[in-house]
Length: 370
Ligand SMILES: Nc1nc2c(c(=O)[nH]1)N[C@H]1C(S)=C(S)[C@@H](COP(=O)(O)O)O[C@H]1N2
Ligand SMILES: [Mo]
Image (tube, rainbow, N blue to C red; front, side, top):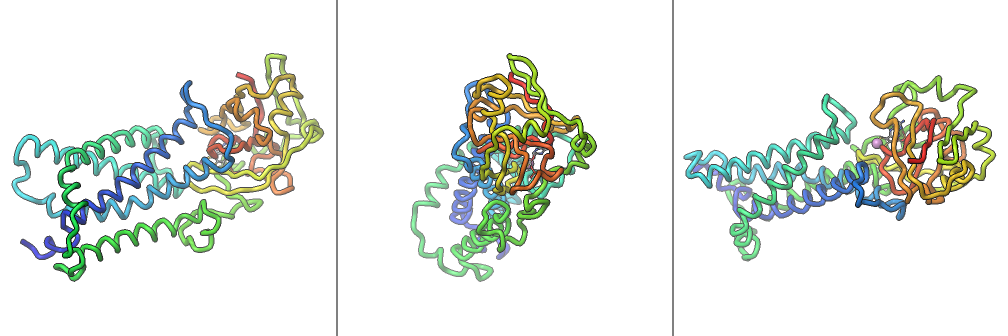
């Protein structure tokens, strides 16, 4: 046998330990991803509260960071078992063949999820399929094959994780002990997380070399899609812009001056992008309950929000009753005390507590009770 294959990395005990860590990060990533999916495509039985204000910010931050931590862990796990992947004969029996096939599916699905997620976080959209739909579908394949894999490996897991073994500390072929390899793996995962966490954890902003766009952008807040890219600059600046609010009581229109004349509410609220970055800011505008009353409706109704933007994936959203009843859900006119920058949604944009960024519709033109 080649000496490298006897190295510390390739013992059953190391594989099982890293497997356990991966199971934890993957499960966390799956559950937070599932939650994000439910919030964006809520089935009838599902309701997402508007408080605590920062809850989605935390769950989606965990989604991106547990995914990032999983990348070095998955690579270490594959390195740990890779001699086995080249064992001969390739197929020993039918169960053995099925097990190998399931590992192939598992690795492919896991890599697909981590890599597409990473590209999405980096805001590169090199694909021509609709990322969230595919990322969501493959997540079920990944989690299903992981559960199957754990069930098959349970006897090995029990053996490898429960028994104390003094040789874990001894240097093996390659000079590293099993413990040493595990420590290096954990450290890589930790560095990957700290290097990117500044995108959502304010305290880490200055140490996260790789954190993508925190604090950058007009008015100190990152921009996801600019007014120019959305093709709304002219319509947003049109002097005869008005907002239309359609309720069962009829349609009412509000000019920018009408909106400014309504009671104004100021709230500290985050934009929490599905990509994992988030940032709090001070927003001022008309609280949705006030606006609904001014338009002749009661708060607590579902509202369809439509943007001036034509045809973008995020050009409209639905605000559920929990949010239209919340006095901190704003049709924002100001950011940090100044009129909204066109890139942040001038003349007005939705900013609601505890919501994914994709649903914080910018350049609003119509609100309709549904
Ligand atoms: N009309 C419209 N609204 C939109 C978007 C968009 O592309 N079009 N992007 C959304 C996304 S994905 C995010 S994260 C937030 C970002 O808001 P910001 O650019 O003001 O930071 O706006 C949301 N509102
Ligand atoms: Mo976003």
